[in-house]
Image (cartoon, rainbow, N blue to C red; front, side):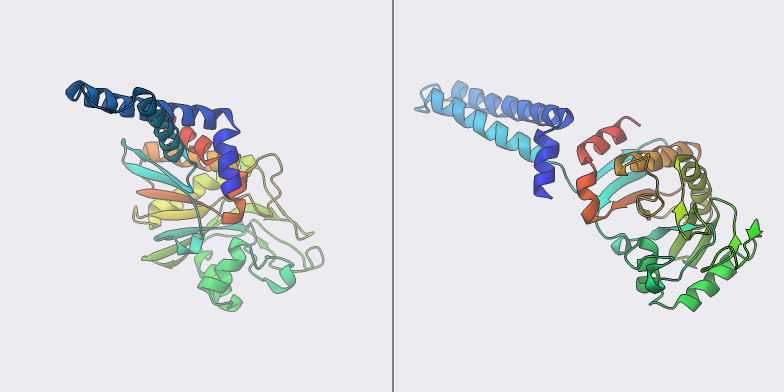
Length: 288
């Protein structure tokens, strides 16, 4: 992680310009303090050359510290009031409501990693929230989807494993209690070959449905979500940073109309930190 932070800060144009500006600010503050000191104590024995080198060294160190890529960046939007945060960490350790990516048949079975991979967000959701009780999760999903008719039901001969009822793209199943909601968003299509497919257009339309569900059920409380589309959805045309920007653009655009929630946190897995440039994302947030 440290190697990636060094490369982000000193190996990119944005990183160098950010560090340069921070160093310049530190140099101005420190040199001003030294000049003030010499004004009031002109007979000071402080060597001019030593003072200059000290100011330069402290400015460089302070600038690097101030511009060092963080594992968390936030931006506050004032009209209307809401906050967006990008953080590296554990999705399930975040406070508030959670978004869980899903597919259009809402498969849940993790056996042999055939349909849902144990280590995926969906797999962790089953084991950490439902304690591995697939039947209980399926019952709750059935209740949540009762008012949404499937668009098609596959034949078992065509899809050899998993669920058969396909729901409209972007369908959101709302689980949990008012204190802790789980929004399962169908942003991908589970093919009959048991691989998930999605794309930028599909994610964009599913996000619109997601924000509406959050608006209705989250009571404007904090919501955390993963970088949807970065796992097994096979979106080869977009990297992690592009997916995060897509989510941010969709959320901020919708929030300009009316507040969806007071804070949205996009959680990046620690192992994916090397795939994102936090300085670039922080700059992107400031331009929105």
